[in-house]
Image 1 (cartoon, helix red, strand yellow):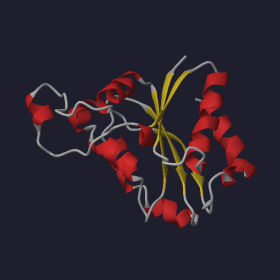
Image 2 (tube, rainbow, N blue to C red):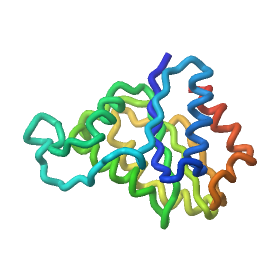
Image 3 (cartoon, one colour):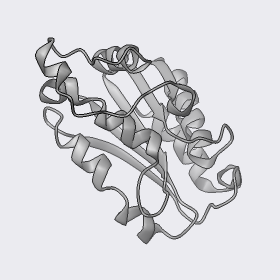
Image 4 (cartoon, helix red, strand yellow):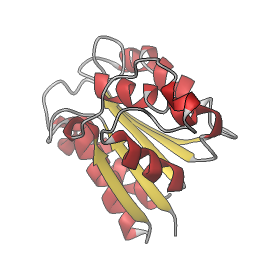
Length: 177
């Protein structure tokens, strides 16, 4: 049994990437894994101020917000799902803030199996152009390994993924963890 952490950065509770996260969760739980789904938009996560306070005090950020407990969940996870909608050819602000706030532990992120869930209102080329921040983060893991990618293109309106094959694929990908 693995510990799975799903980081959903969709600001919409019924957004496409969020719905795919929930399907992934159902599949992973059906396979017997322990799953925690964190909706970053519902958490208080301040922006990194590059003060280096975390480097002076043993890797603990000077902010006392929701990031500390999420970093602990990240440390304990065997599997991490990074899920984001695409906004203006990039990841959501919520995901970017989370990535930036991993700075206190960036030199010891550990080994994780990584999955991407990305949705976009435009075509697949938009998704391909938007992955730099996710890929850059994953490169800092020990033995970076992306095990699966779900890209939902041309889904501008919330909920459109429910009627597409990718919805079942999210479940199967979770089940295959």
